Image (cartoon, rainbow over all chains, first blue to last red; front, side, top):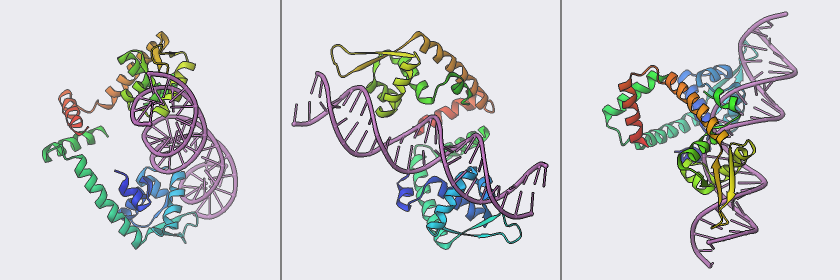
Length: 114
Length: 114
DNA sequence: CGGATGTCAGCGTCACTGAGATGG
DNA sequence: CCCATCTCAGTGACGCTGACATCC
């Protein structure tokens, strides 16, 4: 499950932040925390990792100097794509015992829970 | 969810070990690890907590002096019962959005995955 | 000898708390 | 003054690895 993550030198937090950056575009760290549910104190360290690995870059918001606008890089997008493919493969293997109809039912029931 | 645990001064590992002791009776620590899926190195520390809190007691197996036979105490059983009731309440609240039929379906689908 | 048991030390991830500095 | 943002330090639970001594 996580061999794809360690192969990319990435943890779950990195993946979730990359996915949020890809989905919402350049975001402040506070927004990243809100979109991913990751605590602000964790976002700080995780963004720092992404910057160090060239998966994202950041600049100060000129109109609000508190904000750190984080943007995904091309390298980050490529890494995210590989992680997405690996995740899809793992999910397929995990859900293999279920038929297509059963998968839909499972998703529906789990969504009802929250 | 976990307020019932902290109220008893207990973590998930404590609960799982108490439940295993209640279900299987006096067990060696190795057996506890196998029954609960908790790593041996974690069983060691967790059993030590249970002993310190009077929730379990242990003695050496006279026929195999490597083994530590752990037994649940009356206090441990009472604590387990309270935890069980608290857990049942939380589960009921969590599954409230589902009908009885839907709960059965969910359990069946999840069992297929595991 | 090989294998099982118990113990210990350590690491990594996830999740949270509290505090502080800066800026709107 | 109040609030948002960012940063840092620390704690706890969970899960694992490697090592070691003891005993069967």
